[in-house]
Image (cartoon, rainbow, N blue to C red; front, side):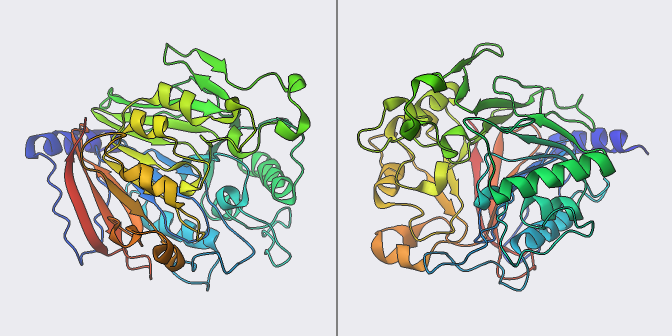
Length: 412
């Protein structure tokens, strides 16, 4: 039986049986099955990393962060410090990849070029076997698991809004150069407005109601009409050097849709400019206008002080918020207050963190009552996308055991 035929049969059975989610606390998280959408927010305590297993088995990794210089502000590493974050991420991916497919990532994407999203190089970072680059974050994952296509905001020149010449960027570009030459890696610039840049590549026909729509990158924002975009940032030549777009402002983000289910992720875009700075530095508002209501949303910039403005929260109004924690200021008090505000939008909402810093619980009332404070946060959407559940997996070891299950939630 071909893999395509197996998918078709599994989808039919799932629809007939309602694709019941029988996962219980204490069990090892069950394997992905055809027709299911799994979104794994991987907990390392050192940055962002999200694995998507799409309905036909297509795989996508968004970010692979590695903070290289520990601080008292940082949450403890998960599961522990015996391996690098990139190694933990690669091992997690290797475990969760569908058994019926080769161990590969069809896509990997960087939202932007900061160490907690791409990997930080330090004096102790190990070299790749080839010696051409160092192993940190995405380069370590790519060393262990083949990547077919890489997407980022800067390819091929990496010069917006100015030359990107950090040690982390030089290492990443050395990785791309070697992988292109030796393994045939394809690299593309992430292009806002498109819905054909990240697609189902294994068996797309059974899933016509699946889409990933590119929303934003480098200040270019989808208008919501066909594939049209507009440039939110003023021309660079008109901006004083001290006010030019930051790396966070240039983050790339998308909206994923599967039937009625919608999901948003947007890197570290800000929504609240520093005092005295121009209003165009609010990137969240135009992004929110394009995205609209979703079921699950990842907090921008880890819930830091410059993120989640009231318009953004009210426009997306998700049932579930998810965020990556590696610092004692994730989230800040005003952001947490807005997330919970029923004046901004009514109805219940659950907030999931993957590695809450203990110090922040002391400062901010209510953080001890999150839907999750620790663990891999996994969104599982059955065939068709009409419902979803969120499972929390133990991140203290590689047990992949379920510690909590939330839902079922009805998709919008």
